[in-house]
Length: 188
Image 1 (cartoon, rainbow, N blue to C red):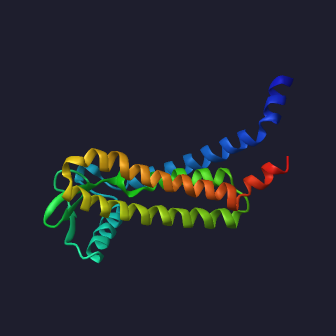
Image 2 (spheres, rainbow, N blue to C red):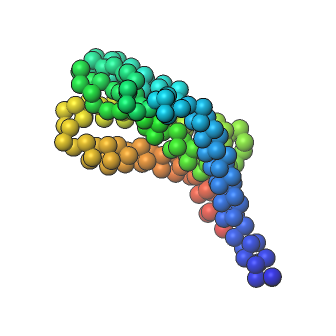
Image 3 (cartoon, rainbow, N blue to C red):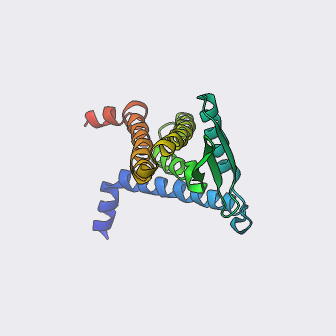
């Protein structure tokens, strides 16, 4: 019994991190699932946030002077992205980056410092992820229009690499700039 107690004491920061991470991750994931359950996939209903992401991606393309439109898919619950009169992509629930935001927020919360600072950083980080995702979809639409044979490379490798690299950079920034990990590490 002393071994377990000593182990828990020795690795207390790690266990606190895990508890905080998985608690917020579970709460946000369940909340998101409850939100998604309001929409009936059998009736081809698309959640509101995914619709917003589709509209904003179209708006970015239009802002860049490109011809773009979005419309509901008549066969599955998603949004069709039309670029220069050609269907280039379908925007599904997984394209809205909410799962990435949940993962990001859970990690930041697990390394939380002061509450206001943590909440503010999570909100700013989620906003950055959202903007990056909108740009990702718009750029992906242009790339798929011009290079359709590279769909797997563009959609499956390059664009996820970019978005996850930014999330990693935001985590790193939190740890070393705002949370003060480097400062507390050097005091030992």
